[in-house]
Length: 186
Image 1 (cartoon, helix red, strand yellow):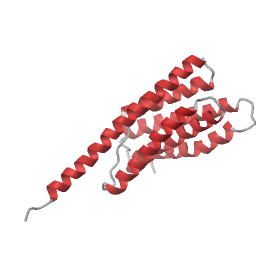
Image 2 (image 1 turned 90 degrees about the vertical axis):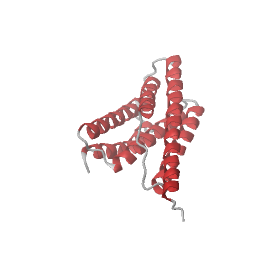
Image 3 (image 1 turned 45 degrees about the vertical axis):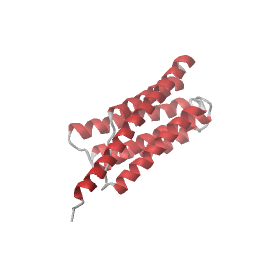
Image 4 (image 1 turned 120 degrees about the vertical axis):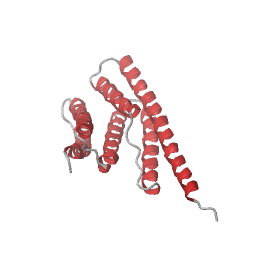
């Protein structure tokens, strides 16, 4: 296991720590939990940077890095929604999108010769925008600014979803074309 994969694994362990701190009776628990979320974002940035710069990209990392991101983001959104910091529609939109992506990824992986669609720039921009939006909510920057940042993050998430959907249909189309070209005429 290389350093980027270790950083991804750490992000998985930060998820329950976030939840425990978020719901703890500590003073400033939301602030501390948000700092854990920010630490997860830092590990996400570092693992991607190190994997690309030092050619340590692995199939495990391609699959697990976005899963860690999705689970962390969904956890944070559920927690913030449960406490009334975010409207319910945010978790519904993002949750449905993330579940569809997880099922689509599993489908491609198990039905398409272990095919993976790696993260793309739209997904990364959407993830960064959610980090910024959550930080603005947690630090109580401004209700209006926080709402606009959350709205922008949701819109960017939907754009990323459309982009992944296009990638999914491209992979499915390539498979169909390969099957047709492999059919022999007798």
